[in-house]
Image (cartoon, rainbow, N blue to C red):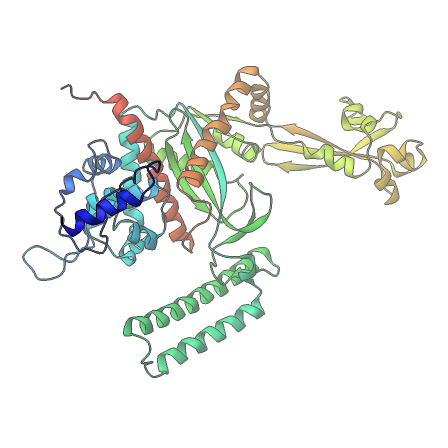
Length: 512
């Protein structure tokens, strides 16, 4: 008997007859991840036929991208390294923005393994410097590209300009509140930055740093000096305009401190103005302004819509920030119907802060048209005092005699602060322009109130797309021009996403 058989027999003899049989150990396929492999990849099979990158390329090939190629110095028949294809860079950024990726470094890493990016790059790679520079390098070409995509959407009846909502949203700048300095502190920062730059230029080469690292340090120091010089100019401009002490940011001199709509706090921001078509949420126009107020942005917004589409919308929906007399009169001369909130009547709250009770509000005073005066609830007259010309209105002031108010038993409820100052009750009567009056009457009708209820849905659709899907709650870049380019890419990406989502619904698919 062999040794193996003897061992097996001995084991069987010594084991208990009631013990269960031993189970064999599971055998699985072991992965050798450290093993280098040679893999054959077909780029065409990296993504499916209905993948977004294929749709983006199909759309771009219908458009004129010649402006993006104008600055390329490499030409056929001559030596030189070929730069990256602008069509590929546009498609790559549009695809990245559709996934909420806005940083060049992250896109560089992501594109090395993501199938859609690898398909666009033909299994290649693009440095993040090239990606970042491309975003801000082609401002005029980017505007033209946006208009071309918009015309494609209009030709496919995805936007009709029947009803357009215009709104503004505050987007935080790449700066902090602490970066805003007064003139004295700004001068100190500039002096220190210039001394640091001069020291870097004169110091001997550090053997611990590579040539690229030394050059990067000098470039960063030079950029800081330039930002501080821009901040100094911006500070002087603000002082000239406002006539008082101002502050400027050393990080982003173009940024302004604005109230945020989400939390009501204040932060360095830009005011993004977006015009959205009501049919499918297509963005018709965009802009970035340093002004925190929206009231002066409606007419420029309508001009941008007309420049991009060739037409003005039939109806323009706005909130109370835009329904000023100036905007009402301006749109009355144009072939667009303004529909907006009547805004808040702040005069009543102002009177309440002055101690005026509800029984002595202006509606309880009687106007005597023949005598051109008001009669108060106590029977005293408020005579005409002066008038003030406003845009679209004339504001007339009527005041009671100080002696009448001082002797009146209801003065503590009607005009307590006026009596303390030795003056009589003041009442204001506003004679509106007929066009403003007509607008107010129109907005009191149920039909137009129902239309106005659509404003928030349309306007917030594009705002949500920009902030939630594209991640544009805070700009990555600094300076008004670069910030505008960043917004343009995000708006373009929103429109391309709408085209990809709806294009197949309106385009007959081939039958098999």
